Structures are given as C-alpha cells and as structure tokens.
Amino acid sequence: MSLPEPLRIHAEDTPNPLSNKFNVNRTLLHGAGRDFSNRQIAELSPLATDLFYIPGVNGVFIGPNFLTVSILPNNTWWAMRPLVEQTIESFIQRGEPAIRANAGDAGIVHESSPVRTFSEDELRIMRILEDEIRPAVAMDGGDISLVSYENKVVRVHLRGACHSCPSSTITLKMGIESRLKQSFPEIISVEAV
Image (cartoon, rainbow, N blue to C red; front, side, top):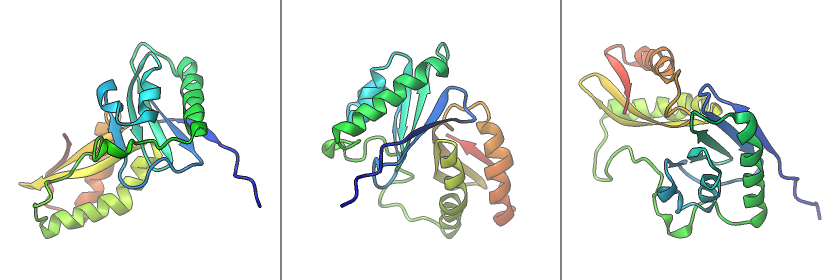
C-alpha cells in the first residue's frame, strides 16, 4: 500500500497585485469555482471562513485545485502569504470539505436562469470561453463566465484574481475581445459586469 502524496501548496503571484493564487495537490471541489467576496457568504465554506479570519483578507475564490486569495491594499504579500499557506494546510489536514453540504449554489455566479434558451452565437461564445479562455484565466487565479451577448456586446463576469485586477481591462480588450472577434467580427466590445 502506498502512502498518500505529501501535501504541497505552491503560491504564485497573479497579474493582480492584491491577489495570490495558491495551488494545492488536492481536489478542493468539483464543478464550478466558488467566489466568496465577504465574511457572511464565506460562512458556507469552512475553508473560506478560515481564510477570512486572517486580518486583511477580503476575498477568496476556490477552484478545483487552487485558491485565489485577495487582500486589502494596506497589506503586503510577504507578510500575508505564510499565514494563508498555514491556514490552507491546517484546513486540508482536518479533512473537511471546502464547501458545506448545505451551501447549494452559494458563490457560483450563474450565467442565466435555468429556463433561458441560449442562441447559437451565445453557445459558440461559451464554448470559446470554456475551451480556450477559462484555462488561461485560471492559470492566473481567476475565472470567467458569459453573462450575455446582446446588441453585439459580450458581457462577462470575472472572478478571483481577475475581479479587481488592474490589468483586467487589458485582458478583456487585448485577449478576450480579440479572440472572440476572430470568430465574431461583428462584436463591438467585451465588458466585465
């Protein structure tokens, strides 16, 4: 019988100076990432709750095998990173689920109501976002989802490190908008909501 692989947590900077991505070699959740933007919402996640106990933490995004933690501007990562890593390690060693069973869809941003029918163009945009853009955004500790495509304007929701990143406008215009215009030349713009 082999022993489980030792826990590894690898912190990395993101383009957002107020957010760091913490990769873990464990599965934290299955399905869509969860965004916890305040302490009250975080109560539905024992992991996010633990992280919000650290003074200066003001956002937690939990992905399948990473977390993105955002801090208030008057803090520095050289002081915060060890506290965040220690909190993640302690949580994982307890063996609790990252999201409470009764959390339902808390922290998930829904692109639409369940009864909405997507147009063919929206489905193609969603496929590009899912297959090409979301993996790149996740590498920087964020997530993206389609909100709408109306009047030749694509509206997306950015979470995690991308939510308040100073370079998110560049990412939207130079990256996402450029890629979507390759398939949809009629697109006027891509906007974050």
